[in-house]
Image 1 (cartoon, helix red, strand yellow):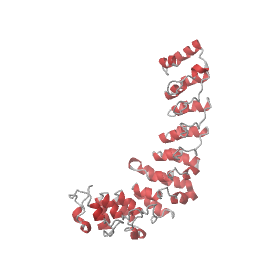
Image 2: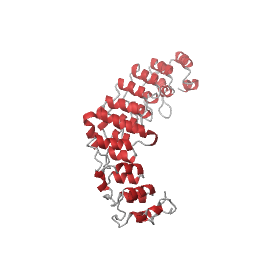
Image 3: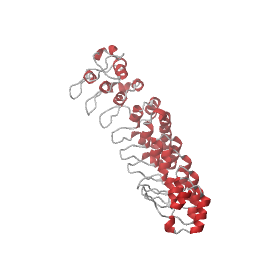
Image 4: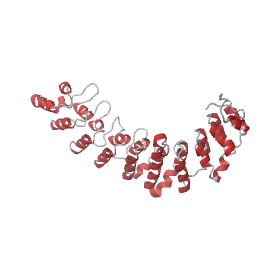
Length: 349
């Protein structure tokens, strides 16, 4: 091995000459370094396809496993020609597991490599296998906002849309929760996945994770304004009046993360107005209390001046939103003078 590595994985001619001269044994070809890597691992990691050809010709073990549980297929996952060669010529296992749970198609899905995912599926990669935390290839693609890969995987194996992680999360919920640069992708993915789910869409929408949240609450927290409106108007299962495991409704979720636009959006449904002063079952907090405690002053203003919530509500310890807000110190915030109901509240932004 040392002589081969000294030549370099890109010196195929030199390595071929070395092999022809020394006639390496199988044990020599499959010798490992301190980390269990063989020549096949080094060749695959370097995407050295000619060297993989040579090693296969000399009967090297193309499915050797290193100390991390990685095979050549795992190492070559970023290079489609190497992946295709290992699958089609060397006939390696397309479902080889790294450390007992990660398969090559999971890694390819996480990276958003559609061509490699398609190649692996063509050669028998299973889409229902999960990691130790319950994620499937579809979860992997969705969590990184890889729309084309997620759409392909869901189309190939629709049941994966209903496979939940150990925390109860569906791919649909992960899509709705995408924020920042992936927010538009999240909206698109939710609509696409529900289209693929077709008659089973309500089942996915009504599913709640271990915290009691559904895709609707995830969309609210992610400030997905258009998506929230579309879900409520399109699907009966998207119930905006429901509560999570702690008794929190959509108002609580919007207020605790400071989404003023979402509060105003929710205000367009009269059915939600009676829930504006609802208290959760954990601390008996109202949406206003969450906004005050977290220093979301624009939300406080919106809740008081626009949505006309009750500032006199008390939690289980007898505290009002004003009491929670007075733990904050910045009295110079421009909204404070307008909050006549809690005019002495001082909060940090």
